[in-house]
Image (cartoon, rainbow, N blue to C red):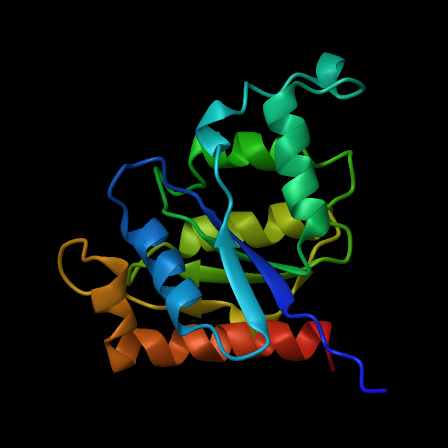
Length: 180
């Protein structure tokens, strides 16, 4: 009897809180161009996470538990985060702070996308933070995919070969890391 292989579940995390964001649009485009065997879903609710407080790690609030559960159920992560003042936006760092001690990122394959031509400081900061958290960065899934011009709908980005090609390559690298 042939067993069916379940798709690799990639959880996409946008570091931007903007309603209309190049980072989020790029992750939505990744969902649209995902290769066979990969499903991409965007994590909702980062705006609902309260400020990190170590006193609440033992009994985290419901939004934190939901975030931790989504991370735990994912086979891999794909992060696209803007840079603010040469660093990671505070709200995104706050989300990561909630899972430093809970372990959902330990040995989890992670790809990092950058939606602009710059942003190397945020990428370096994320690499350091994720390394301390024992996440496993997948080099072939860490790419700059400069989104041209103003924010465009994800479907338009997915139709651009200079965007869809690198996104497919990053997702394929995560797939290969999860299922060598």
